[in-house]
Length: 200
Image (spheres, one colour):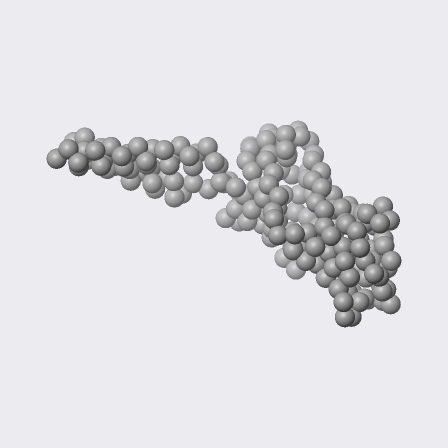
């Protein structure tokens, strides 16, 4: 009877672990930005237009982009005939109005993301590089608590006379506390099962 109970406990814990995932999250917000060289949103024919975004995750993921109908994090435009050269950094300010309580703020929160600005060689393109690493945020508001990551594109390139929107991906992070609890239950159950079988 004890052996059967141990097996059932292991199976239930592992099943719960496999099904543990974050609740879907709605993201809404706006962006502003400035180039470090000029301190504003224009720089040698390169300009940034503020963005806005909104959407709800599906299976924990939300892609932001104009073609997806979820808005963008802003638009980079390079004027015809602009030649650079481009240096310095670009500061993207992302203001969240949802989910509420990002990083502990009860109302709104503005995240700052820094990208490097450079020239793109042939064709006179301007490049904006946000790097490969996502940023992680937590939230704790009236509608719940959780965590998510935001990954912006490694590289946004724009040719003279063209524009390119800044896209990105939000990904919910599963509840770490629940995951650890289920993992602990499964581990204890398996250990008990091994002891029981070993004593036979």
